Image 1 (cartoon, rainbow, N blue to C red):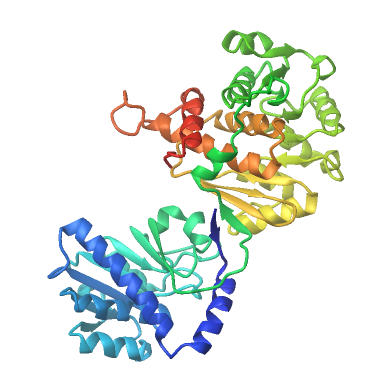
Image 2: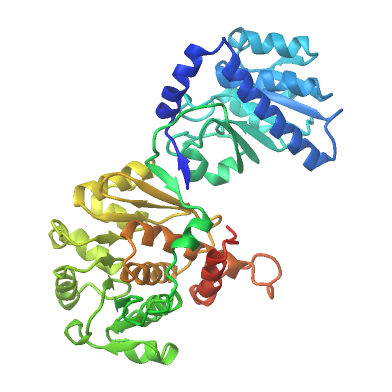
Length: 483
C-alpha cells in the first residue's frame, strides 16, 4: 500500500529530527538523494554525468536550499551547475556557500539566463508554497525546454490537493523527501515519475492510500474447491432502458467479465443483454429477480416514476447497493432515499453528478469533497476522474491513478459499475471492491489503447474496454499489472 501524507503531517514528522540532528543534516540527506536521482536521470537521458549541464531554479526557502546543496554534490561529479536565484537576498546561505565553493555559477534569475541545460531542477517553492508561480518565476519557466526535475513538489501545484490555478511547473521527474504527498497521485501529469528519498521520518497511518497492483491481485476473488455459482457472488443489475439499451449491455457484460458467480439482469433490455451474454439470468421486475447478494442500479435506467419506485425498493433491502448515473440523479432530487440506510451503499459520481448531489463541484480539493459527502450521507463515495477516489464515511480514502484518460469515453462508467458490483456481491468490503474495480477498469482501458493491432496508442470505446477486462484481471492476479 502506498501512503500519501498531507504537508502538515510531514512537517510535524520533520520537527523532532530538526531538533535532534545537527543543523543542516536533514537538508543534506534530502539533497544527497536529489543529486543521486538527478545524476541517474542525466545518465539515462544523455549517456553520461561529467560535463553535463544542470540549471537550478532557486527560491527563497528550504526547497531552494535543497536544490543548492544538490547542485554542490553534482559539481563534485563534474556537472556544470548554474543557479538562477529568484530572490538573491533570501537564498539559503549554507546551500549557496556550498555551491559556490564547489565551483557552481550563480546568476539572478531571468529568462535570458536559462540557457540550454540538459536538466533543470525546480527549487522555486516547496510544500509550504501555495498558489501559482509569480510572474518573474513564470517568465523563467516559460523559457525552459529541458526536462525538469521537481524538488519535492512541482512549483505552482498545490501540494495537498494537486490543484493548479495559474502558471505552474510540469516536471518529468519529482524527487520527494520522507513521504509521498497527495499532489503526487492527484496531479500525476504535473509530477511525472515520482522518486522517494528516505530521510528518516516516522509517520502516522495515512488516510489517503493507493493499493499496489499486487495487492489488488491478491484480493481478487478466485473460486475455491468448494465454491459454486452462489458462493462466488450473485449480483443484480438494474440498468438500461429503451432510450439507453447499451447501458444495460455494458454494465451486465462487465459484471460477467469480472467473474461474478452469477449475474441477474432486470430491465427492458433483456433481449439485447442475452444476445451478447447468454449466461445472464434476466427478468423484467425486481420482484421476479431471485436472490442476489448486491445490487447495481442506475446506468441508463431512466428517471421516471417507475425508476424512482425501483430505486426505493432496492435501497430498502439490507444488501450492498451501488448507485450510478440516473440513480444519482434521483438521489439528487431526494437524498432521503439513501440517508439513514444501514446497509453498505456506494455512490459513483463524476464531477457533474457530484455537483448535483451536493450543490458544489468537487474541485479544487477533491479529497476533502469526497470525504465530506461520504461523512454527511454515511455512504461510500467513488469520485471518478483520472485519479479516482474512494472515500469511506470515516474519512479514509483510496486513490487510483488511471495512468491516462483512456476510460474517458461514453459507456465506460457503466463498465466500472458492473465490475465493482460483481466484487461487492462476493462479500468484499465496499471500499476495497471500489478500489479494486477502479484499478482493473483503468488497466483494461490502457490495454485497449495499446492494442497490438493498432499503431501506437489508439482511441478506445467502451466495447473495446469491455473486451480487455478479463486480460486486466489476469494481469492483476499474476501480479504483473501495468499502469
